[in-house]
Length: 114
Length: 112
Image (cartoon, rainbow over all chains, first blue to last red; front, side):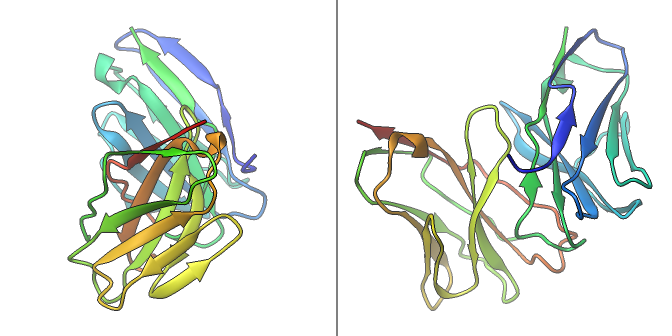
């Protein structure tokens, strides 16, 4: 158990819909990262927040957005969903904003878009 | 960011030592080498990180030659539970915004 929690574990929705994925980092960690893992694209970095501020952006679509709240939990919002958005979404956390070495990953949310 | 090349898959037997080599010819001076392990449908788990020579922890060793153009993750006496995908990552953990760039990884299969 990494100490990072993600909800929900599974999500099934239809194309065009909007969903919100939630992540709670390990106690004391200020940085939260979101990754998407699909069969054809592998594990891809989406976005990072540190203490409420956006820190780095990866291959995140404009239809996706995220935020980190004062209690440090984070939400990833996915809108106008397409079939290709079906994937595992992981949240990770670390203590420092530039801790590119060791990140602690949550169990993931499996999103299925039908 | 330095590109990494790893074998796509490897087979081993329980009790053997497994060495997974990663090639990173374009590694930069400030880059570190980090290895993660991922089981199916689970998030990746940090294994080890190093800059040069040899690093050892309770689960693995990381060997990095002087030119740093490659590295080898060594897993001693593997068991069935070591069956997983292993990712080699190269980057500057202090200047890349914290993001991890994952490649294809090596799928290790340990047989009884």
